Amino acid sequence: MTNPNSKKLCNFVAKTSSTHEIMNTRSFFLCWIFSATIMFSLSYLWHGIFLNDLERLNYPKEIFPTGAIVVYLILGFLLTKVFMIKFPKSIAKRPFLRGIISGAMLGISSYLLALVIGVSFSSTLTLEYILFDLLWQAFEQTVGGIVVAMVYISIYDGNPMEILTRKIFGDH
Image (cartoon, rainbow, N blue to C red):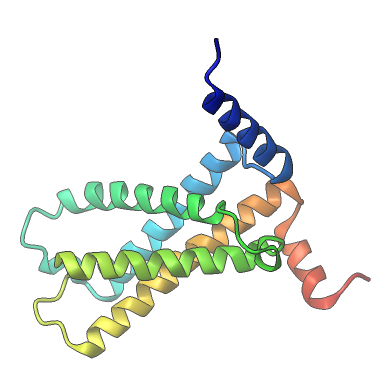
């Protein structure tokens, strides 16, 4: 005897699967890992080299990379999931725009979460510092969103640079 709710759920999943393109496991994994790697690299460049924030850590510096890798793996996973949510058709058909929106949303959200929890390299938070760091976080995750879009396009549509060039300059 089957549960009628189970049948409804199966019908819903089947209907959703047939009407929306679903990212397979391999492409999801590639988007996730590439975006996490790029975002971690940008973060390390920014905080470790340009700002030299890692010198201000009040715990052993060897711990930071491990924790940051875990955080960026989580952010890359969330970014790829956000990229795959159902967007309005005008955005859904444009993966670069979807990547930019997904990344910016995640960057702003993750910064606000870190701010509320009190995670910061600075001991004195000014409005200027908060806005500057918020913009950096949004930029960093937006680049991650663009990486997700490029991997997605390369898997489903071919060379992302060729597609971007065609969209900008038209077909010749």
